[in-house]
Image (cartoon, rainbow over all chains, first blue to last red):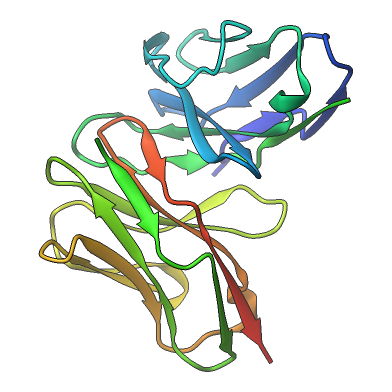
Amino acid sequence: GAGVSQSPSNKVTEKGKDVELRCDPISGHTALYWYRQSLGQGLEFLIYFQGNSAPDKSGLPSDRFSAERTGGSVSTLTIQRTQQEDSAVYLCASSLGTGTLGYEQYFGPGTRLTVT
Amino acid sequence: AQSVTQLDSHVSVSEGTPVLLRCNYSSSYSPSLFWYVQHPNKGLQLLLKYTSAATLVKGINGFEAEFKKSETSFHLTKPSAHMSDAAEYFCALSSGDKLTFGTGTRLAVRP
């Protein structure tokens, strides 16, 4: 079946521009997660959604970062006024649920963002 | 606070020899633990998970991991390395929602 998809796969933008990254989770997965992978910081949690609600936004690095999810499906991560330190691979994952049952998270291929 | 420590940043083995990738964790409650693999320019693929059932967990591609509570470890092993196993491997701990990842171990496999 279809896995998690992300678009675009690569994005090059100029410093100061806004960017939107999109994630399509696996059908039927109620939970959706965003992570960032960079050389200096490794894999960092950004935000997760249960349905359309985001109970934990603790990982968002600054108020330039925001995310939304609509219809319990597609999610967009928006970075405003991009900075060079935002350059990273942004990974999206989805799972059947959350909680102590240890649901597996399935990852998309990522969006490589380069801010010039 | 929860944390994951991967003890080796790089491991190099010869093809056909055993693989051991080490992971230690810190958690205030019974953890769910995962190993993921990442090939170059790809996303993360789940290898296996532990969620308080059997302590020896079998995963894909011949990998196994053993949960040892007394040692707070969850080391990944494979009896015989294949060239296609060359990749980066991440150990992760679940808090029920987000995953906390280790810094990764890059596995090289020599012919």
